[in-house]
Image (cartoon, rainbow, N blue to C red; front, side, top):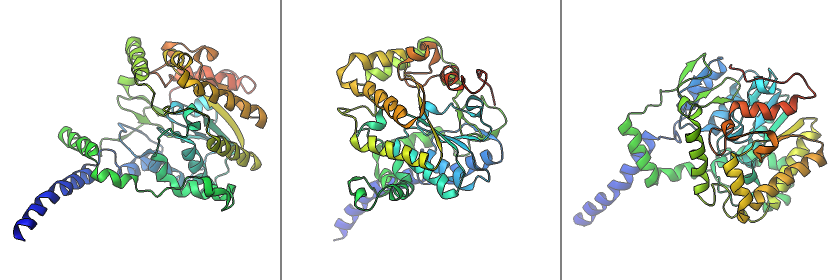
Length: 366
């Protein structure tokens, strides 16, 4: 019996070690909220925050929406492809960008629900749309950390019977990482490099060496990323299409009926509350878009844009941009990589929005 217990203790050492290191190192800040609390605190005090990495974006948004003494009147929802949209480009002093990396339709709905729970008088919602939000198989799960808010909004849209076909999840995803060996490797690298959670710091500058969160929710990318030579940018685009299928676009063999209906109902709900809705389609790098056009299994990327345009027309929604860079006169130099256009590229797109509002906008530094 004693030998058995000794062997058992040896076997248990390894999972306990993995759990301990994953929890205390926590390179993605899955189990500690102090990092996001510090970022939110500085943003609400009127400071930008730089050197922001490996943070829980959904938790940060939650803290900002719940605790910010000021409510915006205009908000932007979407993925990292819309993160550069700021108050100067939107031309609204009461603007906040709630875009998040890998954001899908569930994220957008949950973020809006947080504002509604807070009682904020939202007048305009700009939704940055990506093709994969209509893919049942996009595989993005980070939205589950906002599951209560998502479910709360669904309860307003549908009766209990109608929600039977929708996906409800328990939020156990973070805790699975405690036993993840890949997360363990990241944790070890994190400890070896001596990276600390206190690297993020308040600043009055908008452009810094590190990624910077701006007080209006937008970001400016780190210097290495935004100042890369064109050859590096084009290589990044080619690296993206080298992975086939691309992330979020695997098994995209039809436009999801579930997600189409969810988007339609979300937009209809906003309009019933007299909230103006606008759609933003940010282009892909020419190399990436050409790849979509050439390969049959990406046909629904093109079909998704047609659906978004049809929905915009049917609902009287203004729509700006296109997944096709040629339609907004964007070229390779207007991109940081295969998915993200530059601030100048975004200005080109948003100027079409401003034609009937005011003079054309220019890129401005906060």
